[in-house]
Amino acid sequence: MIVKSIEKRENNTATFQVKIDKNEFEAAVNRAYMKNKKNIMVPGFRKGKAPRMVIEGMYGSDVFYEDAINDLSPVAFQFGVDQEALETVGRPAITDMNISEEKELTLTFETALYPVATLGQYKGLEAPKAAVKVEESDVDAELELLRMRNARIQTVDRPAADGDTAVIDFEGFIDGAAFEDGKGENYDLLLGSGQFIPGFEEQVMGMSAGEEKDINLTFPEDYHRDLAGKDVVFHVKLNEVKETILPKLDDEFAKDISEFDTLEEYRNSIRENLLKKREEAAERAFKDALIDKAAENMTVQIPDAMAEEQLDGIVNEYAQNLAMQGYDFQQYLGMLGMDFNSFRNNMRPAALRQIKVELLLTKISEEEKLECTDEEVEAELVRLSELYKIDLENVKMSVPTESLARDLRLRKAAEIIYDSGIPTEPAEEPTEEKETKEEAEEETKPAKKTRAKKATKAKTEAEKEEDTTEKAE
Image 1: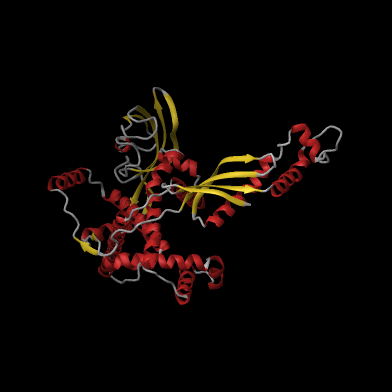
Image 2: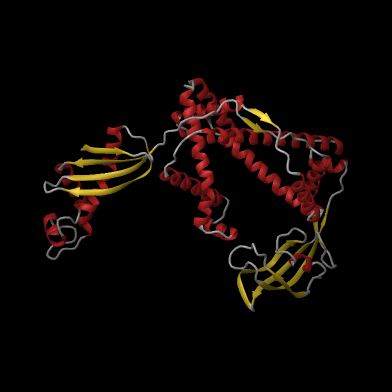
């Protein structure tokens, strides 16, 4: 093989030709014949026994060319990349192919190149850092959440009220016809939680076990799929009313669910933990803002192929994580009211950010000539072993040393940005906007049980974010 020509373009792409001599091409064609002959029927020959020239006489001399070219193209592409010392990203494309009279094959490849970044300012950057505090109401919300987790549920013989769990059968109809996913049986609906569209739960309140009724509503204008703004009738049967009995908030409660003897001690512990988590969240947000500023100051052109490859990785990882939790990816997208393409496009900003941050930190590590010692690599392997409770030798076998050393260099590059960062006061919200926000929050203030549910969700998201950050590090 020889590289005939190469052209580098300004938009991070390169085109080059690789010529494959006739002997190498002939060998590939013969391999294609050997691979495919067992599936070819030729009159007068047993299946798989027809000579190559007979098959080529029947189907054309180029019958095995496609398979031969598919066999040769990865090798030819890598040869050209190595010869020209190209750093490529994404999947290459064959833009042209030519077979000469002498049976020499010439392949023309187009490929995206790893982008060259030019650093801007990345030291001494300013970014807002929120001052954190914990109010007594925050501690109260945590305790309310814990009471909900330790509550007893019992069936009651009375009309359903706010905060009860209504066990219902329901089916929705539009213009008299049932619609998809609009039916449920023995569904546990926490009244006041806002799980259903506005007005539904309010009309279930007051119903008694065994009662049936039709609920007339209109889907919100921003509702997903093709139901937005449509009038709907839900036929509802209330099967059972369950009341939530919360434990008394006292010293005994603290002893039952914690290591503390008094409620006051437990409150102090909750307050300290909340403060720590909020300080950590504020620190993460400050560091993320610094990284984003440094990335904005960098000049780089990201090839489309690189973005698409990163997107593929994010989407595939997302689908795998859902599968591990027992969720089907397509069904999950349906629940969100999205299709695959819209979900993928929503992930695009995250993919581009990941690429920019990696390019930024890689360039800083080069400019700063950052190195990683064997002792640092070993210490990181020990940390991973302890973190994931995996035998150290197994960690060493599964984690490539070169990749780990690179990650450590990138971490050092990030620390340069962090250590020189200057925290500033967060910008004040405009007074009018702040008042409007506070009024809206007051008007939509939920019941205690709903607050507890939202607190659960917020806490879960915070824990996910914490786990994600730790994993990245």
